[in-house]
Structures are given as structure tokens and as C-alpha cells.
Length: 139
View 1 (cartoon, rainbow, N blue to C red):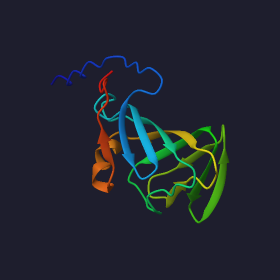
View 2 (view 1 turned 180 degrees about the vertical axis):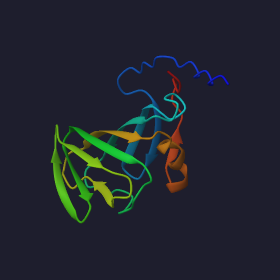
View 3 (view 1 turned 45 degrees about the horizontal axis):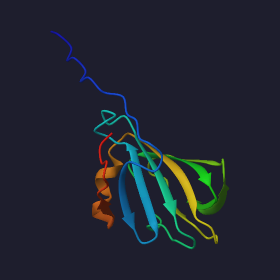
């Protein structure tokens, strides 16, 4: 019996600010690599929240999240408490752990989200995000 040959994947390059964008009430997610491109190993997205923007509410997911704060201060609900994550901070949220995020500050906040396994992007339209087509929607 012969093992299945893995599907060939291509490298990905996105210039700054480009990717597949999703928007909802003061927050924008820009996917740089999603489940299709990574054989569902992970998804990588960049998120920006306007000042005083709440997240989607405390919830759990069947996948892990890792947040890395790029700019500003992200307030993250983790397990049973809110933590203040400043630029450079990392938050690891295992599958099944209650979490949320929001921007309680007067300046916007940006963070990277790594989701393992990939495929998180498929849930966004179901939870009220709108896909925002861009001039370059594919790498």
C-alpha cells in the first residue's frame, strides 16, 4: 500500500496592509494565510480594533489561538479574568478556554492571531463579519 502524496503548496507573500479582509463594527481582520493555503495546519490573521471596540463576547473555540500585540493595548478575557496586553505581549488561548478581546483605549490596537489548526476564517461570516473584497484578494 502506498501513502498518499501530499498536495504541493506554494509560498505566500502579502504586502503590508493586504490580504483577505473581514469587517464588523469597529474591527477588521486581514487573513495572510488561511486553512486552504496551509493544508489546515494554521491560519494567520492581522486584527485592528478602533478605540473603544468590544469583541464578539466571551466564548470558546475548538482550536488554539495565539495573540501577539503589534500596536496599542489589547484587553483580553482569559479563563476568568481580564488582562491588559501591551505591545509585544503574547496571549496563548488553548482550545476550550473561555476568551474574548476588546480595545478599551483611546487609540487603535493591532494584533496577530495564529489559529491552530487552520480554518477559523470559515466561521467569520456566520458570526456577522462581512468579507471585504480587495483589489488583490489572493497572494
